Amino acid sequence: CAAALADVRRHAPDGALISCVELELLSLNATARAAAAVASAVKARSSRGLELLVANAGIMMPPTLLRSADGIEAQFATNHLGHFHLANLLMPQLREAGKAGGARVVAVSSLAHNFAPSQPPFNLAELNDESAYSSLRAYGWSKLANILWSRELTRREQSVCADAVHPGLVDGNILRYSMVPDWIARAAMSLIAWDVETAALTVMAPLVRTGADE
View 1 (cartoon, rainbow, N blue to C red):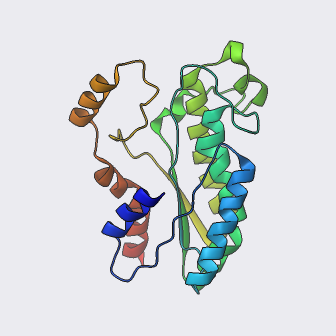
View 2 (cartoon, rainbow, N blue to C red; view 1 turned 60 degrees about the vertical axis):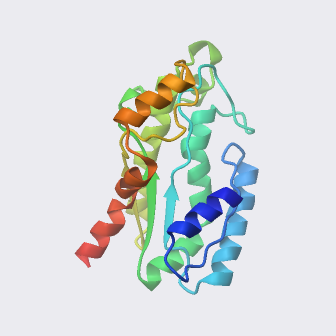
């Protein structure tokens, strides 16, 4: 958390008020504690509420079935359910910002949503079935959920806008479960993937569009 905070401060505008809250999306109870900490920080530091929430954390394609602390397949729990729970708990702060001028939730999805099975769209028993586990299909499920969540959030919340974006191939740590040796994966990613700073521009695109529209 300290390293992440230092990096954010290097890139933040002068005078920006920044807090760092540890977040564990593989536990709904831990996510609830983090949401309470975020809400407290927002209340202490801002009169406008929470203006932006980026649902960016994720894991991709562990070779064997992993489950969260709540017994749910780890990719779905981390990539979607934890973010969904966090945003719901922070909705009062988001609505407050929305009424004051604008609030937005950006879910980092993926074109891999196409790998989710079409029928049925969500089947928890199959998702948690070790004998039927497919890492790519489970990842696709989580990314499809990001998109459906964003659409429904925009429909339900008049003062909060939501977007789902595909950031492209990013040279981060998303391939840590790859079967390819780490040094090969890193070398390939450095050649064909966007660096994190460039990929972040895609995530921020909805904010730029909003400013242009206004």
